[in-house]
Amino acid sequence: MSKLSLRHSYLNFDKLFGYLGKLSSGDRLLFSVVALFLVGSILWSLYTINREVSVLLPIDGGMLTEGIIGTPRFVNPVLAITRADLDLSTLIYSGLMKVSVGGELVEDLAESVTISTDGTVYSVTLKEDIFFHDGTPLTTADVAYTIALIQDPELKSPHRGNWNNVRVEVISDREINFILPEKYSPFIENLTQGILPKHLWSQLTTEEIPFSQHNTEPIGSGPYKVAEVDRDAGGLIESYKLVASKNDLYKVKIDSIRVNFYDTEDTLLEDLKSGLVDATGTLSTSVISSLDESKFTKIQYPLPRTFGLFINHNKSSALREKPVREALNLAIDKEALVKEVLNNYGQPTDSPIPTGFYALESDSPNEPENTESRLAKAAALLEEAGWSKSDGGNWVKSVDDSEITLSVKITTANTEPFKSTAEFVKSSWEDLGVVVEVAKFDQSDLIQSVIRPRDYQILLFGADVGRGLDLYPFWHSSQREDPGLNVALYTNIDADGYLEEYRVATEETQKAELLKNIDDLIKKETYAISLYNPVFVYVVRDDVGVFQIDKIGKPSDRLYSINLWHLNEASVWPIFTK
Image 1 (cartoon, rainbow, N blue to C red):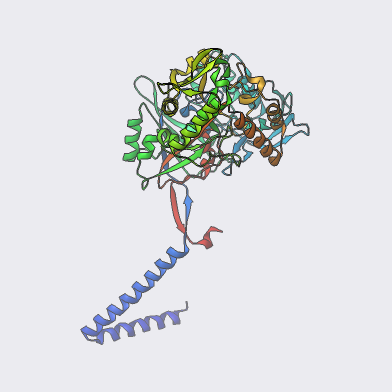
Image 2 (image 1 turned 90 degrees about the vertical axis):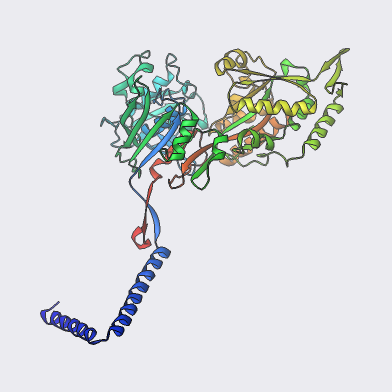
């Protein structure tokens, strides 16, 4: 501005103040009120426009505090099996692939994955310039070492079955091949396996690995790295502080994550309600139902698991009769079961295929009927099959000149929700007039003494078919004996063919048709009574921004979207978001 212009401005202000000075006190008051009104109107208009036009965008910063019941022992993707170990491993380590928000597999450490025309060779090229948290480059040598460790029978990795008979061929520092003995389309799911740093772990023998401090002071290549480990006087870990790894692969918005570990649900719940914990995925459904929905968001993730009653017809002549099995199925109010046992955090089902992973007409049970109607239909089935009610109200039938009573024994794990589910089913069948016994075992005893020798009449069991929906281990006739998981001892040549075709199918329409065929056959023969699909419920404070992932295989998969989560937001005009 020129000196002349400035002089004119000063003169104008002088004239204005001179004019105001000549006004009476009343006129000056009126002028002040009008001026304040105009300024206020302008400010209010700007505020309103800003509120209507601006958008909230996530911004960086803050610490998320997660609460977990349990203590970490193997923060190691090769050995992790507990909720604490799996969650931490997902945050600290990375795999060749990961699950996207849309539920699809996408590249993580891998730049590309190419599958041979015969479906037996998976060729992976790693991204350039990828590093572990200690600055060491991550190469295919680390990938090959991790898979070899999983395949080592002495280590007993829970993932060993995924890599049986897979040959690993290192081509270069960035190129590696996985060679399968035969085509198996769900194999690509295994490429989410977290990768260990060979330079640290290869110095240990197989016997030393489970006892190494690297299991609790891990170094990976994932979005977060360990900054602090807090221990109690006895050396047990009480919490971890994780900080953003600053890895170019993961531009996270949350600066740090504190993971606190709890011995009991009550202490975790207390800290959650007091604001000391922001999120948790380890609360029981009864506690989750009691939480104030105005303060917490309850995110439900369907899981690829089906809880059901698997029938061993070799242990009971009555259970060899299809009408008996159908009557037992009909007598259970599955809607009421989910409500009572899971507090509605689950999906009742008649299908062995988990709800929400493929659209099937039979995803959900038929329309619920009242108890009297269901029991009447079940009773009619039994009567048509030659059963009759005794004076004591139980079902009896003459077989080979002797009278037998319709009685069954349910065997299951001595944990929730198995115990409550077994008691609900027992009550339902007793209402029908069936004599029912429930036997509960600790997990290890159940596997060794019951499942492996197939020593049960009815096994209440959860079949985890994974994101790939490979039902082969649970329903193919070749899997009837241990270590197979065909605990219903199911045999059907058509079903075997469909299960085998599904394992090599790549087209989604073909896979959906095969699943429909499998579903129809298994349901028709009723060698298992499907009950419900559980959901994983993640509770977060209502101001925490979480991006939910579709079709997770296990609860820790929710953390694959951690780079999108946020704690803070800023109001920004749309023009500045471009």
